[in-house]
Amino acid sequence: MSDHLASAIRVAEQDGSATLTLKQLREIAAAVVPEGSSATMPVGSRVRKHSGYPFPGEVRAAFTNRAGDLRYVVEATGADYVGMLHIFSPAQLALPQEKEPGP
Image (cartoon, rainbow, N blue to C red; front, side, top):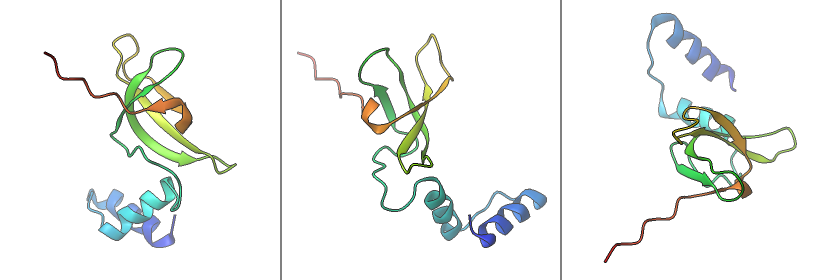
């Protein structure tokens, strides 16, 4: 995170302001998902784990690990485990299939 962004966040925290500039937001996004990454599921995307145990949820964050591999934090929306957070690789997730129109 840049010194400028860290300073802006400190000021916002001190005066209770939650206003950030577009440039600052872009810097935050770049820190979370580095430019050139293959992140195709932005925060807020509805996703599901496509094999094994079911895990419908919503992407809450995307980041790269120390090895440079993309990972997604998904918050569960399933009734039995709503709110649980789990980290997945992109290969484990799929966007939900759109429902086919009924007859």
